[in-house]
Length: 590
Image (cartoon, rainbow, N blue to C red; front, side, top):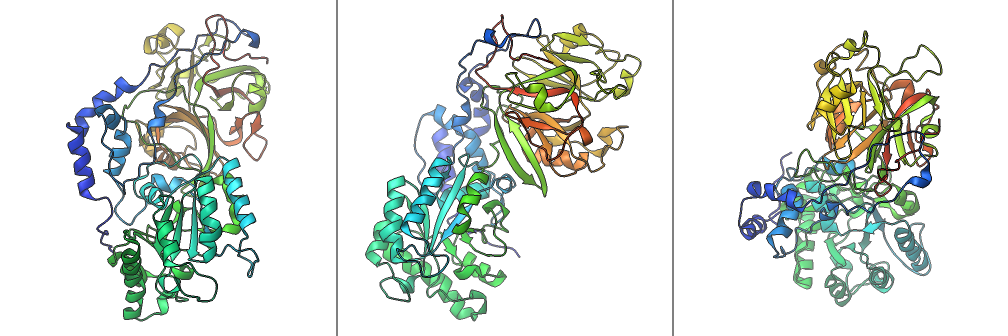
């Protein structure tokens, strides 16, 4: 069905004011962004191996410009500021200028895991199983705080779902249905104590009346509605058990009149609707649209999910509050916005791990830090290779010869900064690798170039491609190039390239950060490239996969099986723990 976008969503006047305030075109201003980016420090090439870890000298790096990427509340007024501030906000502004068609969800938002927790009554003595005591509710708030989550507003969530603008790293939305007195007596004071926002769904016939349980008064609702922490949503007039069963006239009254009554009594626009008991269908959603609501929350005990798993903005999923402790560790605000300065690199951000599912395939991604490789003296499990080094994470790397069980002989040329030795590979077999990605890693950049056996046969030859190269190897195949997933024909004669297997990969995301990862479900190479492009990779190459697929983070394997031992890994070293010219970033002990 085709929906007409509500009049309140993304007002054009807001964008006109932003453009007018800039005083120059958005396209023309992109060239100013590099002026805001600090230079990135270099990592010294290591002269010998092994290197004593006590020689390492920590270096303090400039903070990443990623702090510029914040969730912007488009509902409010645009703050006037300097030109440089607006230029810094260009990634967010560009996202707002390119939302998904309403009421669809933006593809980026579908990758996030934003739990919306649904509460009903909060009271001293429970009456039904889903009631919550004030003490239990404060325990939830304390768990949110200690687990590092950031409660967000309904407006932030809708902006994220519509545009893909990232939320805080670990977001959560608190929602309260019906308008019980406990929401004012217990919930509201605790929200103010912790500084947490929330959305309250009010069915208007309950206010100032004793319908069943306790109710709030209009004065209490007005007091809460005046607080920036509180968003008021409509929850119908009378809370019918199932809106779908109502005749058209009554259904329209429940949806339209509840909005009007709330707006008249509170003096604020009511932008959101919450379906009583979660029941809706196409007819109900159509009237919600016609009434001018911008989004609607639902519930389904048998089909709960994160906000990004919702059907549309007219049916945003929630979780019952009983699952709070289970959900908090899973919260993730989604991938960062594509960078304005394409082709740049940022090796100064902290290393972080994300577990997510894209197109029903489970993945672990580890991003940030400084990329490098380790070519071990034999074959080991990936956690063993990085044990005792400064590497915080690693994925199995290039293909290797299976002729001997303990051989570290690689297929194709290889250079690793831990031993500072270029090995050309088997020159008679190298032509078979032509066209595959030659990965070149330097102190401040990474390059992926098509391998040419007759050209890339010496250290001097690859230094012509990258003069300060510290690491090099030949990957299995290009998966993503300049943001575009690679078609089947690009894999050439690579054996069984599209068979569904566990896959290992690494690359650079749109922010210029290194990313390593594995799929936890079997996937073909073509689909993998499509997923990685969707996940925000600028460039990505496939590594040795299948039985070799392995990923380690902080000493632990992240795969649920024992992989084949390997002699080579792509590793990430934390920023700020870089070597000076007399030291090294890792100490290879094997």
